Length: 301
Figure 1 (spheres, one colour):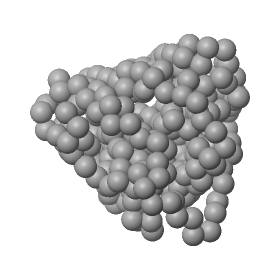
Figure 2 (spheres, rainbow, N blue to C red):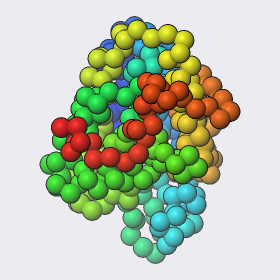
Figure 3 (cartoon, rainbow, N blue to C red):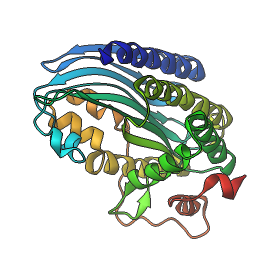
Figure 4 (spheres, helix red, strand yellow):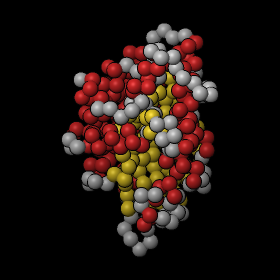
């Protein structure tokens, strides 16, 4: 059965990534919250008030349901109403220092069981970076790592999934991207099952290779109240995206998932300000130049 090979890989990625984040923080530890519901089981891990990470979450879940929710069948209407099984790992990291970007990673597996037909499976996932004070060398490293993850699977993979990420993590009501992108993919069954599984592993491991060197470079940068206030303001955009556009949030809520785990992605502190406009020429205004799709590898190399 497909899930027998997927679930151990997902759990191992959760362990591996959380351990690497703990080491980078240098003191704080993830607290595990194992849960069980009518849909399945999972383990939510949360780190709070670390030296580096103000809040970090790493969720594993394995759920089953009697009917695919609308958010999961929008592009597969033929599976509407089919029983399903899903497993995934989702990570959202909110650092304390405004010079360290927020990051997100997710890998997931779905299998549907339409009546009278063979099961239909697919993978999804990716990772993206949301800086407050962007550094070009960080963005270049992030996208070089993303391209290296994709390279063994075909030269067309990175450009496709990079574009998909730019289009998906886009706040339509604001006319801006959530950050500087990365990788995003869904409905992945273009290769044999084992190849898709290897790609999922590469994405999960590549996320740590992409993110931790950036954290290490920026975590000791001195900041003050101005930078902190701007960080909290920009976190509001993260909230807007996750509650308005994120398909994973919709899937979790529509399928009756565990609310605390679904909303783990929310930042611990956030600030909203009416009609805020950064001062022209300021470091805060500079961020606007990065909130649009760009060919980072060509522009920054």
